[in-house]
Image (cartoon, rainbow, N blue to C red):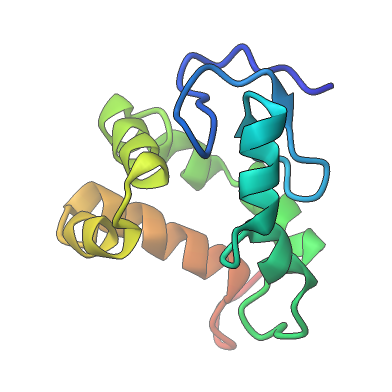
Length: 126
């Protein structure tokens, strides 16, 4: 089992301290009851990952490129940016908070950096 020692990790259903991870999508949960509720959720990550829509998926190579980006790592040193991301991950209304985050210059710089890595413009030199 993957480590769940991160102090910000919470069960995706009840927000309690998680003990397990979903085998399909790796989100944390604390009990069998929460697992079944997560599994039955129509908007679950597993449903998205198993869908046939691939236009919004990021390739494994691009995910690797994100992990290896010095510019992205530098941005992620900011405690403010990390807190914004934790808040976004835990928000009930993610779309509303995402709109607010996109008004934050640091978050906008982070989003732009991610997009430059996963969707480089054709005229950029590698």
